[in-house]
Length: 271
Image 1 (cartoon, helix red, strand yellow):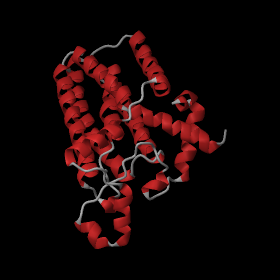
Image 2: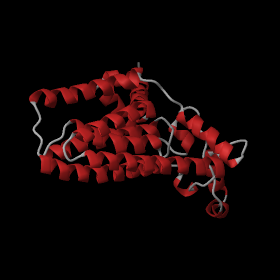
Image 3: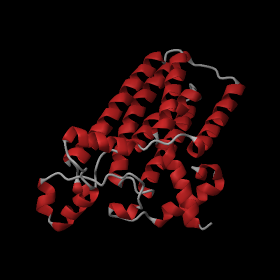
């Protein structure tokens, strides 16, 4: 098995960590854990509402692009990355909810671990050819806003309640989370959400075919005037395509980093 194959398997495993069937149960678990913590019940409600709004904005950007061609050709932007947004909005909150601590350093470490995982999910969307960098950055930024609002509320409530964690929970929580993150990409259910979004975009817009990224990029190359005045669409990816299909190439160091992390965490490549 060559390095490119191993790296590709790793990144496809990572990208699955941003899928709805994996993240929605995680979001419900995080909300439940927050509701159980003293002082954080209101924070849990705020987070679910904020997450719902972020999902609606993400879907609206995809509908607008696929159905009506509202995109930004110069940035190769066809809609917010849902995987990146959900990962950035869920994982930092989930980690913080599993291991609540009054320590600023502890809160920073748990949130930082969630942000690192969300960033990996975002990078994977570029590597597997599902999104451009601008779409991933928009998703991470939107999810990050949701996380920032919630974590600030959690910090205040945690400082007031100052919970004490048992050694058993302190050890069990990371182990359970690590097992879940290892097994779900390999054996969890898969959902082709993009096909569903494309279908609904066509129904709402009345078009017979979605706008494509290829159209957008061709118009951009042809003539700056038409591309700047009129919105265009993006290719409806039913399956992941190489990043070169998006108009650029993934830097070699990203593939190399995938091989390196795969050596440390081989189960992730099974997805």
